[in-house]
Image (tube, rainbow, N blue to C red; front, side, top):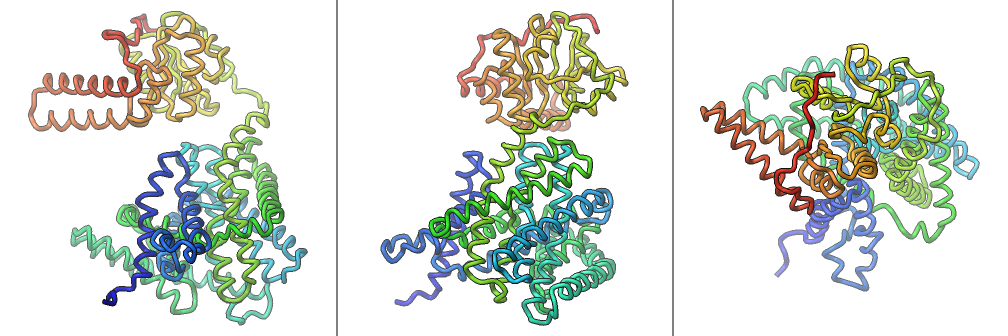
Length: 597
């Protein structure tokens, strides 16, 4: 009996969904970037990977994508959502606040990188229009990978993080004109490259004008009407309708659906419903973006590496080197420090996901030869996979290029040591609360922080905080570590906590260490490396929520406090047992009561 469904389409769709449900959790478990996981899975399970061996091994049919066309719709929706989210981030106020870095640093990087890479492509034999398209596509970096890395490392608010975000924002803005340029040039309506580019920018300006008018007239009233119904599913449906409808409208007039989604994001960025919309599409964006990267990975042909390994590796090194040098020089011109400039350069040196979109569109329109397209996609994929390693390299090299700047007099204040005191490492929001409680209970303490901008201001406000690196054993000794009663670590960066604990344990094996932890898994890790007490943020938040709820429900406060304390001890005991680090009964952190400093 003939199957009533198209089994080829469904089997390929099952491979995509299975990747999201099985492969990606494994990738996350090993601490790898999920975007790279999707790219790798697409390359391995796609028609150019294991799918090419189905003739010899028929069972691979159920584990690979046989025909990329069967899942092309997922790729279309993935890039539609990606551009919509980018548009949603581009509010006028955000652009205004970062205009110097966005349009100065970011704009200069795009122009210079596209010109240099395009010039190299021209010397290699490409026609000027093709060279310009390749140069512009390779000038872009990976928003998805870089932002995920910075967010996971907690570095979005550093100088390098803000400059990287501003540059990526400029690149995202450049995507719409780039797609317009490719689509217009592909129709054969352009008389010259310059004329085509001017026409593309003019069309983009007209589109922005339409966005402003339509956004004020239609979008806000529509979402007010939907919100008044107080039906979450209706709000989700309307959001999806706007995204897809705008994309279809753009496609009808000859542009890409991705450009239409970008327009939709800009439309909604200025409304009061922006956050609600982000919440509504949150369940979809991760999956659809992941499926987009999976389909991008299917275009990676490992045979390219075997065919031209020297050219491919040389091209990858050259691309990263050219973009990194341009970015480092520009970052210095925009007064970023050498360490921040180096990190921005290496983070944004690799190619990005929009190269796949631009090159794919140009190939479909017949502007780029299939061999050039395959080589460029492989080159971009290879450099993207190097991004986490380059980020690590930048952070290792940063101390070697640090600048000797005159210190604020407040930073020169040296710790006075002491005995029986607590050393609080980190004087951010968490550290300040800890110090306030130590003050209230008249415990002597000494706070340290490595934020050269914040420490002087905090000292002028009368706070006992000193500037320094708590991973430096000599600095710890100057803080009186050998005579201290306890070390309290309040910073949130896991790598930093590990380094501090290692130094403290090397100097004082018996030192009680109380450390902030992100969650239960992080707390178990901290117990394993020698922390006396780890305080998981997620568990503490749940306990405080439970306490407030029980008291609000009328349970006696004394009983609630006792039960919360008992539950906290249960959690602590379970975590210590899981880590094999249970302390003897009755052992405490040993902080002694001292007169206030």
